[in-house]
Image 1 (cartoon, helix red, strand yellow):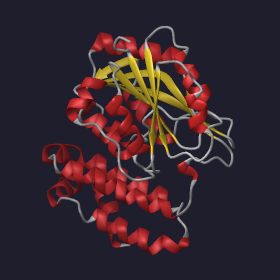
Image 2 (tube, rainbow, N blue to C red; image 1 turned 45 degrees about the horizontal axis):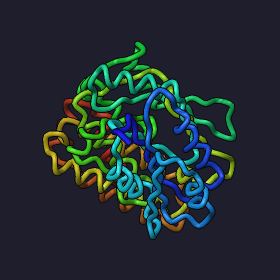
Image 3 (cartoon, rainbow, N blue to C red; image 1 turned 180 degrees about the vertical axis):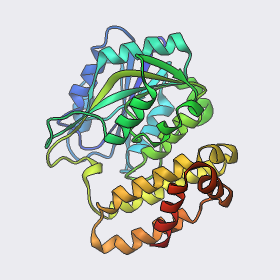
Length: 319
């Protein structure tokens, strides 16, 4: 097969009820050539058998021997991707093919490193499918036309956008050169991938169309719904991301206020979703992470950028 237009990388763990329909929705695309790379993260149900029953040569199945989390699975899939562009998708969501087709054409026309689109969020307990409230505010601030081509310096609050992978289409060769990867934690492994995608972009194409409907079913297995010790991995994910920023001092300085604002918001969100037995450990680890802040960065945040954020950092570090 000649080089496909798009590689769709789908991490899979016990997704037998949904993965076949997701794969089929991409294979039905007739406006672009597609390969679908499914990375099984040690499923215990019939997921592998269901994918294996799809005889289309455009479907590649990679089986991991043990469960590592979606981030590691995505990294394995990206290493195998041969498409001009890549999309990291979930095994239980819905793709909007018209938006996908539009985005691929716009990427060709613009030469952008990545296209970032809006999304829909379907919750079992809500009739609304709107994006998360913070994301709506950021989108409304930056996107006033159907498409916008920008540098990250022009749209820096995108760094605080919810770190979903499935509303972005990346230029494969570009991000292979820059070393795009997702985090190694079981939960929150998309934080690192989100930041690397944006800080390593030459130009970002914003497209005002929903690319994906993210589905959180009632009683579903979505990791974002879990309240358990697994929440501690958020700090591991932040540590991994900040270590990458520390290795890039100029990038760290430029976007430090956006990084620490994200930390305050994410840890505040997670604080209400952990069990009492890990409360003290969670608070201590948040404090330790906040104390990694570069003093020069803190000075700029406090006296030049956002004194309120500096105050929130200090208060959170003291708890």
